[in-house]
Length: 426
Image 1: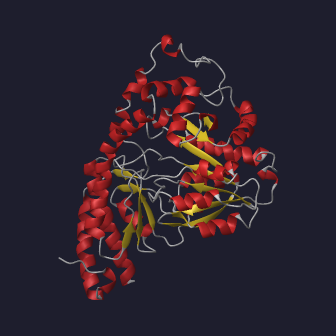
Image 2: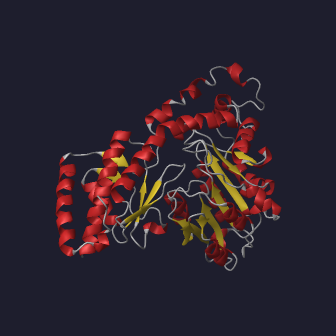
Image 3: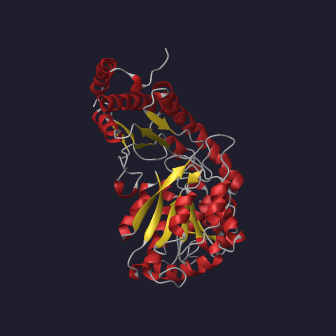
């Protein structure tokens, strides 16, 4: 049967359809569901495939060939072997890598914190400035926005196009306002849209002429190896592009093994110019005596090199690929042609972005919650939790089982239809 756009329905037809859908919704509510698709967490079976990490180091002899001794103090920027592995992953030089604890988010927070208290490579500390602003491509990552809120940094939303942030908007702010000190980016399989920045967008970032000498691009490459298919998206190396323009100091790159190995016991890393590293280490020496170097070595022993990492990521893809397909199949089957929703079909990463009819996202969210399905809070993908059009919902398919996702996705489509009809009927 050919689908009909909801906007073309007569009021009587819309009311009849709404009544039928309400009956189906009541059946879902009666089932007493308890499902959670709110956060992008690896499922237990994803964690199980990394069990070999527990035995990658089992005795003193396993660390004997490593210098300095990973069991002792020191090495605040990480062991050489781990630097070399992340250099392969990120396409940079080992001398441009700093290894941290288990979370890249901590390293991002620390880079902002150091800028607030000590400035950037000799610039005025941000805490002494009348105003500091960050650009925030939207929809985006709520924890990036949380860092800004923590430090009282004003956030400016930037539109996202199909190939990345609107660079005309970015240039307007960066090149004309010295209070703009940074921009958050998830350049590959963006959270939540799944967009990978095009070569043109990366080159446009590298060619920026900031009004502020201490402007920095916070390049959170969280999903750099998180392909769902054999042929993943390709991302141009921004540090190399910045270097071509003599602007290698303008970017900080972040990544981690959080969704490669164990989120609670992974390894975080940042890559940047050697000048940026030297400036950061001046403060880091007061912050720590050394990170968990045994965990770093454990990861090196287990993965060995980039080929080992990529082989491991294929195991992840085999587990979560069917989950993404389950959600996308439901959206395609139930919502295509109705003109009440649009969604992304990412080739990697951890999320699907769903835009429902403007003004209905909160209603869809509540209908889902009332039926027993928890989703990421409305507005979370925008600064200050404010989605001005009340349209975006972030779908996190990785943690539930395929059967749970099938049920949750069918319900999501049902709730989207109900909310749209309520909006249309007024």
